Length: 355
Image (cartoon, rainbow, N blue to C red):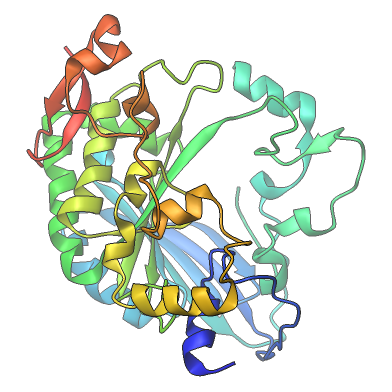
């Protein structure tokens, strides 16, 4: 495999064929510990398989500046942004000696009674462990096969919690302005981010550039927005949907964010291939590997710009992120008191707003 083929295969989207052999390069085992404080008061310490971590909660007034440099100071740093509370939790994660004791067994990642998970739909810390267990969500790695008496909270086989994630990588050079725009939205309606903060806030992680043709083009911050979505009736508008949609559209179109390939709605993939400078090189490798398109499907053809569009215009499409609002008359939501309106900060956005 030559370098071009290798860089195409790193993020192949499954369209280059079946990978039959992989050579693994082992990395020396490492241990980590995490601790945290709220300015003056320490609130937890944890040891896991990568190093030492502390979580520190501060006011978010200088977060736009801190976000640009904090990741260079700690190997596994990330943030939990709580904009409506004007707080941000800094995770300081560094390595410690291999003889440090600990086990990562984060409670929400353990199998739980299926009946209890279903009850949550109708109605912590300390965390300690090794990296190989941490990356497999702790105790789920060796959980029992017990005919779904216990299950993970997100297991689709039980009628438990249901939510959606919008995950976008904003280039580091745009992060400060993007964060300031979110703060402007908070000033307009402080309550709207309770929708995100009830689901762990906005998780923010560092990603670096990659030579992969479909990898990150430059250093960026990865923003994870987790929010409720109706499993029973997707045509029901979400609370403060317009604010969440404006953040999404602002990231994608104003700040040229790249989507996580598996965690977004259709609109995040609209013309996404144009954001990758090596898109043509990838398609050339694809043509050599699979000239008959045996490993392609309608969705991959759409996001690769080969055939059709990811946009689907139909009744209620804007609620599912299948399309962007254009005319009120096209959408069912008009009957439910929602109409197409410009964004409150990013005026070019068109969002589903209650009137």
